[in-house]
Amino acid sequence: MNAARMRMNMTEGPIGPAIVSLMIPMMIGMIALVSYNIADTWFIGQLGTLELAAVSFTFPVAFIVNALSMGLGVGTSSVASRLFGANDSSNIQRITTHAAMLAVIVGISVLTIGLLTIEPVFRLLGADDTTLPLIERYMSIYYFGGVFLIVPMIGNSVLRASGDAKTPSYLMTAGAVLNVILDPILIFGWGPIPRLEIEGAAISTVVSNALVGALSVSIIYFRDHLFRFQTEDWPLLVDSWRRILHVGVPSMASSLVAPVTTAFITWQVSQFGQEAVAGFGVASRIEGLSLMALMALSAAVTPFSGQNYGAKQYGRVMDGARFAWRWCTFYGFVVAVILFTGAEYIALLFTENPTAVNTSTMHLSMVPWSYGFLGISMVCVSAFNAIGKPTPGMLISMSRTIGVYAPLAFVLAWLLELRGVFLAAFCANIVAGLLGYFWFKLAMKPYFDDTPETAKETA
Image (cartoon, rainbow, N blue to C red; front, top):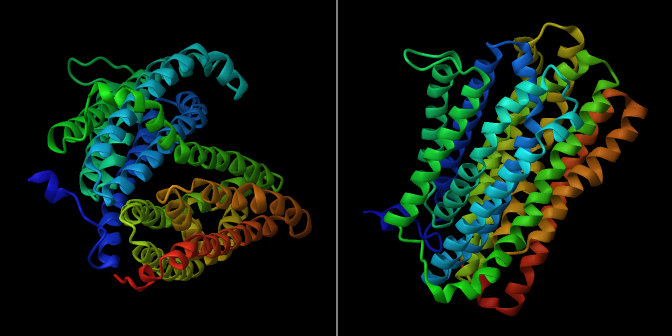
């Protein structure tokens, strides 16, 4: 069957359907993960406010672990997709094998460092004597899932790079469903299984990640035959890791900057009262759901651009970017109209506090008009990563967060109060979108100047 039918050659055929066929499974997988996180939080909340607070303290650390996983995944996907496009099967096997080895090393490092630093790290984050024991019970298990979180990220990235987005989506969905099933059983106890409370939540996460990791590795090894253990590959180990980290490290840096900026913006909003923070939280969650399609699209651009770049189909790389840009513009406009029209009604679904409703309505009436630009910037970052030029992508991401959003919010909050914070977000998205659009076009121009015939290639 199999592997050949599951893979997709994106260097030929219509461009739009190829990108959408990758995008839809990715979005399904993302929805599954979001649903699991919501369910996980709800089950833990049933234990009590203290348990919920303890797990909330772990979110920044979990975000860092996820950023490491995503960075390695992006780096692996970038290198692998270009090799798939060039039909270089030998090096694909080498990169996949060496990427998995790197993932195991990073996972073991996360486990070791994490277990040794639980108390100082979480005291630094503000945990006290009431929450710290609960955090220690949770994280002493959670950290063992580091390897099982990072390895499947690598495996799924290789599968997507080959054009197979359905298998990773199935795996992510299966893991999320298993986690939701195990949560109440292990947290509250069922039949012969004892009530494990907060440890049960951690165990369900580790077990689910382990299953997904085992299935991912099995598919790559037995179905796609992408692992290769040969002595002649050992001298190339450092070269493989260098190529993966060349893209992976800037991607990690961009991911790690985002929560710092979010924390700063939350602090800015808090200057206008806790009710304003509540309203901002509602708007942020709606924004996260609204942007899911754009995140899936940008993720789909990576294997598409990488394969075509590896095959020297530079015209298709540009045409793929143009398709994605048009899709972002259309989708962003539709979402903006919907949220602008229903902003107040949406806010009232979550809270009746007048200040919170006003804050959420203000955000949802203004910021979504820039979502199209934000989507364009995300697409450009993914495309830059795919073609092995991660620095522009990193700078585009950081120009939005620490270059425009944070400093402009500080100034405009003083001039325009709360509306100024949201205006800063609006402006930052537009700047990032325009910067990405013109920078990517400029970066691709030499390929057409050097090889004019590629400009004639069409979808």
